[in-house]
Length: 316
Image (cartoon, rainbow, N blue to C red):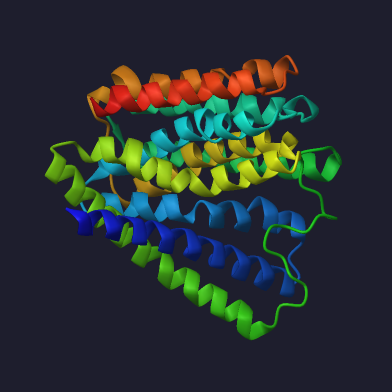
């Protein structure tokens, strides 16, 4: 049983590197073609950084394990709040009170409620997918309008360079990044999904549980690494906005697109427990968003303990 674990880890590494390469290549190609940095940040970077989750979800549906796809998104959203914000707060206070994320937070809660409502249909099919993608289009349009109208903290502006931008990057390097990303993502997704399924079968747990734990934590590692570094550099004021935006994109884009590939059956256990944990974790951000509270070490302990408790409940 050592080999499936090693291959799962290898698949995850390839996914993360492939996603990073795709972002760098796509960003610089778009800027080379004259696409504004604002548009690149709101679209290509957002899609590129979520490409690993998207590829995993699509591969899982094609392989007949849709529970892994749904578990990946729900588990990632829970991990993004409790783990990705909890661990960095243990290292240093995160001054999220300086960041205005109320509107995005409201969108995330609305998307969570919409997602849960659609899940109670028993299956997330192409109809639900179109509804979710419609919500994504509205959110992106609103973000674009706000970014153009206001030059506030935590909002992308035309004067900011998007992630991965390098004005001096040669054409051959851009092409190399694109090729590596386009090859690495499906290869990594295939390795991770196939071997995660083997692990689930060997240990007698469902693919849903593997998605909620192993795969969800793995795909949340980039956000965790970024947030930890920001906390160490005392620049964690934007972490809250990043987590909220990531969760919003996971719900609307990842599941929205994946459901067009094939229907995603909703495990009854999701309806009884996991979806409500995800919503509860999301609502825990209320005091940090609306009451201008910083995420101190105390809150870091609370969030981290809650996440460990959730994992214990899921795995037992």
